Amino acid sequence: MSELKRVAKTFIGYAKRPDLYPELGRKIIKNIFNRKSAFRGKEKTAEWAKSKAVSQEVVIQNLFGIKMQSFSEIFPSELKESSQKEKDCPIKMGGAGALELIYYSCEFAEAKNSVETGVAYGWSSLAALLSLEKRNGTLYSSDMPYLGQDGDQYVGCIVPEKLKKNWKLFRHADKESLPKIFAENETFDVVHYDSDKSYEGRTWAYNELYKHLRKGGVFLSDDIGDNSAYQDFCEKNNIETSVVEFEGKFVGIFVK
View 1 (tube, helix red, strand yellow):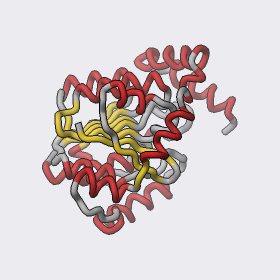
View 2: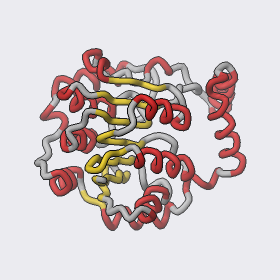
View 3: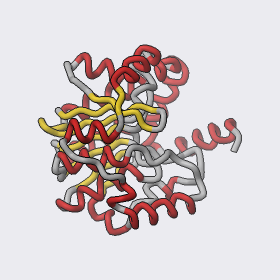
């Protein structure tokens, strides 16, 4: 699909969904006035993240006191089944990410309630749910409809049916989904951010998620090297964060 066709299809998709008009307005403003904000402070944070970065295994041992096993060792059948579902999916979405980091964050926090932004295939959802189901916990997920391609029905497609009883999926932008999630549950054991990449979007969501994270809970954010929003958030709140380098990108993580 050409870029022009994708943009046109996205706009038509928004036009058919009045409930998404607030996000459409934000996107128009961002693309006209705030296009550079996606990369604000990127060079500064790239150097900062590189200076702090270690592996998943090191962070899981140092932060949680747990010796890491790979996801393929712990859940070989689930990984095989979900990998096949991704292969069978007719559209391309985001990759799997740092599954062990998400899973062990939930294990360490003995999570009963977790919230994430960004779902795509559902790999991060799978990692969290495999821990949460042990305690009959609930994962609350926020993800925008995929309006630019015929793939909206595939969001979360790799999550097994048996885990969906512990999953609540909200299909709006974070600024609409998160207030609804917080109205259902006020306090969370783990929060995981992986959605709007803009500086403003991250800053807003970080503050909201942090307010609803219990003391002793775990905060994670993917792709923190895109701009300086995560570094600035941690410095403003005097947070000592760890940084994980995973497949050439950086993940921020700390215990509140």
